[in-house]
Amino acid sequence: MALLSKLLGMRIKELRKLRGLTQAQLAESIGMETTNLCKLENGGQLPKEENIEKIAIILDVEYRELFNFGHLKSEKELQDELIYIIKNAPKKDLEMYYKIITATVERG
Image 1 (cartoon, rainbow, N blue to C red):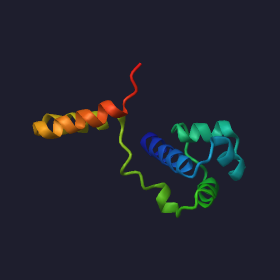
Image 2: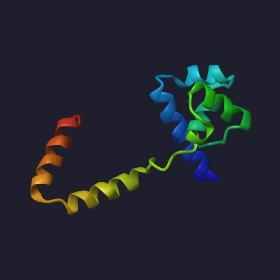
Image 3: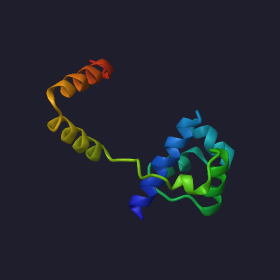
Image 4: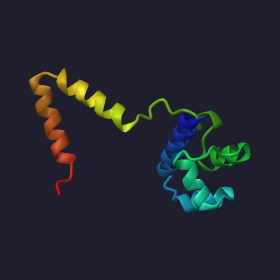
């Protein structure tokens, strides 16, 4: 259950941000305390059935779309995939990847 609650929370957060809503706005719209929505988005709890319905309506998605989280990957999975891509890339692609990454990474 821990993985499901984590993935569902990540998906709700993703959809909320795509809609330009803050946690407080979504929480108010569904009649939930912001702290509870925060717990939900962080995977600390699963939403009640009635809240799943409310969240889907407010985010303007079908219920099943809330559970479409196959594209969500952990930080480790992303790192592993990037390392694999880099290790197997020809030099011309490596140069392009380098330019893209260095152009988008903020330097402190």
